[in-house]
Image (cartoon, rainbow, N blue to C red; front, side, top):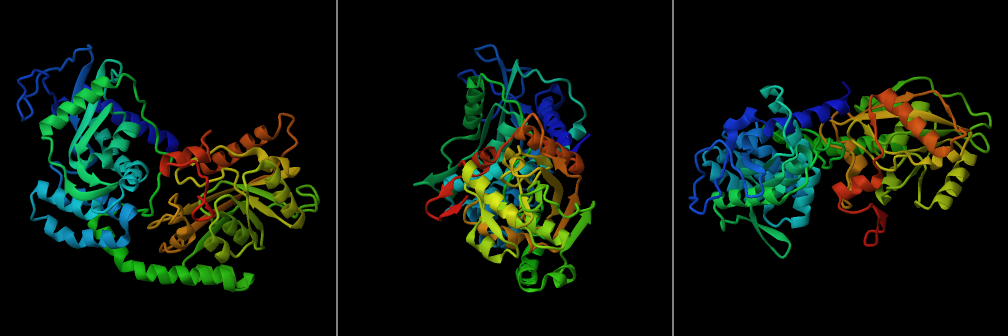
Length: 500
């Protein structure tokens, strides 16, 4: 089973488990009679609503976390992600300093304290973005453990509506994961007071837990469509590790050294002569692993004057630099997303594309006349083992294209981001990892004179790279990623004058 299939399999298993009788002991059914009391009722065998659809409420904290009841240690990582990714590293440090005191608090006080530190002053849209783009990756790793319950029978999705309720997390933290990646029909969590677009950091005590459960039942009843769970393909955030309290403390201890290491590594690639870059980078902890044989020098076949066209999948902005290092010579690189800082620090020439087909064709053809060119046809990065749809323009520039399969390994910080303010630091954060690693695999050239056209060539190259990497090819695009993670279509920001 491939990695992509495994992700889908785990998500479907989770969806089947929560919709089956196997977890009946965890279900809290709520009667709809007018005499309902404030406390959840004793579990009856079923709950039938007026429209004939069986609707149940599942308390999901035990599925989202590793302990039941939740402890300070298991609650800490998701709140820390909110504090750092939506706030700052300073806010995360404040939450870490609070951690020892959380152990002497009751569960309710513990949650309220973490909500105060993590949410106070955050913009509502930014917190919602973290709930949509960052936390699903964390929860998918934790919730996948329900596979230990065994194979449940096929869920009767057309007959049963399942709502999720949480006593430990604000709705904004869990709603996207539980609806989009698990398949719940409605989600009710804790509510944080907000005003003028910002969170106040205190809980909204307007409704009792029983009232929120009734609201969950009503929302599930009104949802007449079946939401099929989707695999985890896109996610965002800077932290590449699970931020347990111990791991978070280790990160803050390492952080000053990481900044120094990144500066040293950038200086190696930008200031040293090319023949010294490889050995010096290796001494600084950067590893570039090369497999496959680079193609022979072009003989007028690839470009108009002999430049060779390389097409690679896109993991970080450093993909072309890794290929240049593997070739032992400079190459030109074309990219859509390019900040002024990345352009300044790049050791190879970079050219920004306009997303105008004719103009981009002219620019890339001009570069091919001057030398080798690296292009990333996906148009944006993808962290998971998937390949996005390849733009076919590169297949119209040369008689032959050389596919290059690249992959990277980040253990502490991701080197990609969709946040406009953080994107310029992508390469800096990648080089802050203790041992950043790249693998570069050269594949056999592909002819572009396919009678079925450039789209077929692009699909062929995508398939070749997917096979070499063990990734899953998809028809998803840069627009799909930006809409999910950033809430925009990846347009140029008029305020920052750079591509987002």
